[in-house]
Image (cartoon, rainbow, N blue to C red):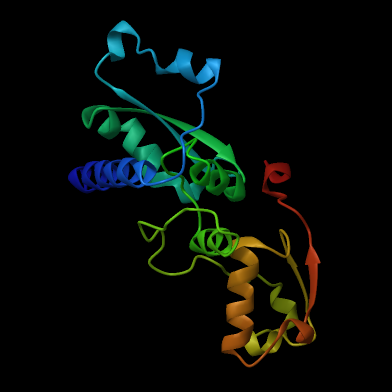
Length: 192
């Protein structure tokens, strides 16, 4: 498992550097970026990597946290810093050659490509799409087809949750018109 993390990250880094070299003109680094690029005496051999990730620290990033905790990145020569923001920000940074790569969902790459943002999807993040519907058992829902006529809350009418819900509805012969959608925002921060 340790070797898998190291090899996967190293390959992702190398691919990103190669792909970044194929992009448009490189943006001029900001003074903050230049200062952080100067390694300290104890991390002189480490390559600093600022890794954009979606929104907030979350369980979905557990493999990355374990890799830091176990020292896999350092062992592979990387000093990784996580940058939590919206996935669209990560895609925009990569498209503008300000970051070599980001952790984003595939649909974000598709939407960016539709807007002529020069990014590519180099690694499948999920084996299975991680979207679920959680409902009060009193509703008696037995199948996704039972969502017809129901009110469904999701963070917004965009992104992985929305795309996953649309795919689920489609799979069971429903459309967005068959349900009422409420954009409830990203409220997991409030829960903590």
